[in-house]
Amino acid sequence: MHEEREGYLANLDKQHFLHPTSSVKQQQENGPAIIFEEGMGIYLKDIHGKEYIEGMSSLWNVAIGYGRKELAKVAEKQMKKLSFSSAFSTFSHEPAILLAEKIARLAPGKLNTVFFTSGGSEANESAFKLVRYYWLLRGEKKRKKIIARKKAYHGVAAGATSATGIDEFHQMTNSLAPDFYHIEFDSVAALKTEIEKEGPETIAAFIAEPVIGAGGMLIPDRDYLKGVRKVCDEYGILFIADEVITGFGRTGKMFAVEHWNVEPDLLVFAKGVTSGYFPLGGVVISEQIHHLLKEKSQGTLFHGFTYSGHPVGCSIALKNLEIIEGEHLVENSAQMGIELLNGLSEMERQLGCIGDIRALGLLAGFELYENLLAKKRFTEKTAPKIVAECAKLGLICRSVTYNDSDTIVLAPPLIITKEEIAKIISILTNAIKNVVVKK
Ligand code: PLP
Image 1: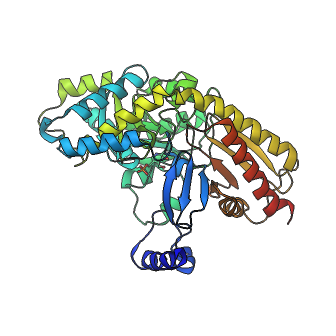
Image 2 (image 1 turned 30 degrees about the horizontal axis):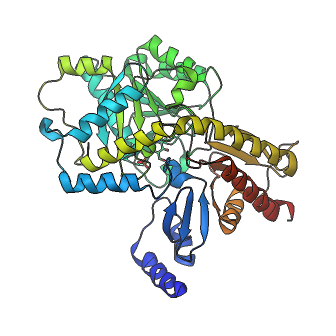
């Protein structure tokens, strides 16, 4: 029965569904990898009723876990009351107003005004346009260049993909947006050099994920973010923090920049703001930028998405943030992050083929080595095989093989318990033994 339905759906999938960030060839040969049907807590169930721990929160996303009836109720209520209304032309509604105020309160320091989008790429796109608009209003017309980091991921819209520092994302198109420059991901000096090379009077902003996520879970050195903030200040360049993955508790603080006491001029968010129950993102701008807009912007600000400030999304986000705060999920992320790190460290001792563990809150990654002491890599990338084995054993995690890595990353829901972390470690250990140790 399940097989029949699966076959039917798989066939339609192959014909009609072009998947995002997926192998077309693999889809055509094997059909969809898994067809999911339900989610509850940290678990997903597939079409056969097989259960998986979603160790990636479905793309670093479902912070409060699956199947939360509170969110469904809020969505239903809002859809019945005001299903949609646009925020163009200064039309407004309560959910967007209250969410903007809530995010302004949660965001560090003087980040106090929110522009809403439907997701992370649009949010970065908006940040790029807003910083350029800011400089135009200030009469510094040459300031349009954006400096980004190699290995970073900022999304797939034209500007966002151009800001992304991962070659594979550039290779699928023969036309990138102009005025994006990339520097070594971990060097403050490289930022200074690039600014000097291009001319400070031509640079609009520098963008950084506080912790590089999709690029392989790379935590900066202790002084990196403070260092780049200082360089930006020295040259009067705006600093955009892309907290699409790291925002709303993922790293054990509400926002990752808090780990380093750094305040950006713009902070980009998405994902965790609704735990993926509705597509929503945005960019929070500083009082200084807002002040200039209030003072100098004439006529219409010609930038807005139909769904900027969608009332249903905003209502869901408000309830989601209430849950994150009410259930102390930021604190849980910090505490369970330590459990996860301890579990991975134990695996490192036991298995001898994993190393370079990086973990901050419930965001973790590690490398695979044929010989850990000699830091010798496997001749063939091994992370994808382990990820496939984990799925067989009931755990979803993710491999990163670009950026010269053979990495496994984890980002489980923030509601996870100690026992559930132990389950993740146990499945991972078995999967690695099955793929590597018994090879
Ligand atoms: N920025 C970062 C750091 C991300 O990780 C992502 C997506 O994973 C994006 C931006 C793009 O967000 P979206 O996929 O919602 O457009």
